[in-house]
Length: 362
Image (cartoon, rainbow, N blue to C red; front, top):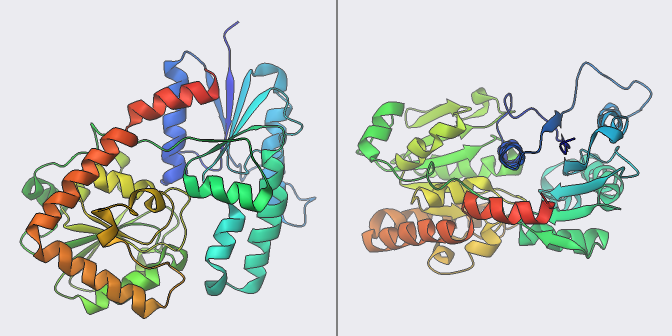
C-alpha cells in the first residue's frame, strides 16, 4: 500500500491568500511529485467545540484530534505552526513547520495591542499551544529569526532551517508598460507598492504616514485575506486591489518602482523574495528573512529602523530610501539585479523542493 500523508493547517489555500497558504500549496505539490497522497485538514467552522471556554482553542484541539483519530491511515503527519497541537501524542512520524512564533510576535507588537491580547498570544498560543507543538516532533523553521525564537522562547535545540522558496520562472520581471496597462497602473509616475493585510501589525499606520507625505507617488495596495479595503485611505493617487491571484502578482511587482514593507513582525515574509525575484527594490523593516538578506549590501541601504522605533523615525527613513531608489539609477539597477541573483541562488523553488524532500524524508 502506498504511503499517505496528513497536512494540518488553518485555512484552505484555495479560499484564502497568504504566506502559509502559499507554502501549503508548495507542500502539496511536493508530496504529489513524490507519489505520496495527501489529505488536507483545515479549521472547520461547521464543527464547533462548545466545551472549550476559548472557542478557537477548541477548534484547534478538534482539528488535531481529527487526524489522530485516523492515525492508522498515515505514514507522515505535517503540521503548519501550532495547528496540529491537538494531534498528540504524535502517532507516526510528525513534522512541525514553524512559520513564526507567537511569543516572538507578541513581543514585537506589545506596544500596539491591548495588554490582554498580548498576554493571550504570548501565554495561550505561545507557551501552551506552540510549545506543545514542538514536543516529540521533527521541527522545521522557515527562517533564521524563527529558529532563534524557538531556541530562546521554548528551549528547542533540534531545529532544521528550511528557507521558503519562490518560483523564479513565474516571479520574474516582465514588460512594465504591459503590466501597468493590465492593472490600470500609471507607468509615467513613480509607483510604490504594498502587499499584505491592511493592519497595524503589518505596519499599515507607518505606511499611511509615508503615503500622506508623498502625494507625488502612485500607491498600489494589494490586500490579502482579512483586510477591509474601506480602511485604506481613499485618494486619487491610491489604487487598491483585492486578493490578486498568486499567478498574477509578478505583473504588479513589475509595474512598480519599489516595495515598501514596514511590517512589525514576520516569520519569513514571502513578499520580500517575490519582489526581489521580479527585480523590484525592497524597502523593509528588519523582520523575517529581511534579517538575513537585508543586512548585506546593497540591500542594507534600503533597510528601515527596527519596527519598535519611533514612527516618525521609520517614516523619515522610508522617505530617504524612496528618494534614493527614484533618483539613483545606478543604485536601482544594482539592487534590482542583486536581488534577483540572491533569490535564484538561495530561495528558488527547486532548491526548496530538494531540501524539503530531504528534511521530510520523502
